[in-house]
Length: 243
Image (tube, rainbow, N blue to C red; front, side, top):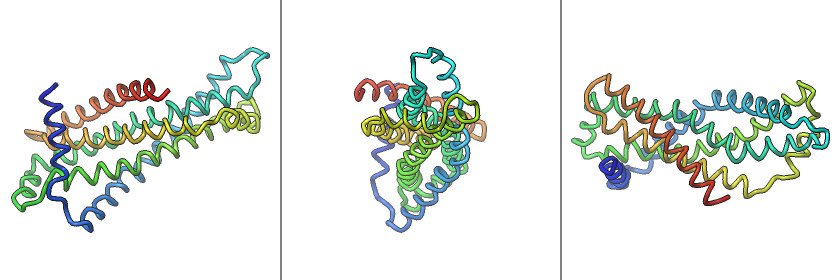
């Protein structure tokens, strides 16, 4: 474990040696932003809407007492969406989609000796490959979390309306009554930490791939597994420190 941690930290530090020209770096970052953000938007949207709908229905099922106002459902769904559902579930999904893609891409470049060719040409391969992915992830994944927050609440409103649980105005009233900017801040802190974990761990696993196509698949599996475990671990740490 300590060997892996040390090699990971050295890998992160090596990204900042011999930086590429700004135009090259910007071009690669925009390309990665398109892959990570735009390419992941449909799956994030679908999951967010349905998770919001299911959370609303299940919350209404548990709150059966006539003494509890229906607006409480909006409060619970809104707060749970911002604090946990949007950042954690979305990033776990992105760890499977984005993380596996990054690890497979970089791992394939390693076994086909493209990374060795970069080193021969005097290019800092870790910075050239990894840093644009990390920067793109730090920009796009928090943006996806904000969209997921909105769609989770929107899915809850749609489910409440279609199932007759409550009116949209009651749902919105409950969501607005307990909204705190600090809650949104916690969600954004989680999104930045999780974005760094997904992109850096996946790049690291792909960069140090050895062997052939089978090992590329194993690198992708390790990237997803380790990213998910670290996301859950730091989810607990951030919740403990900030809440």
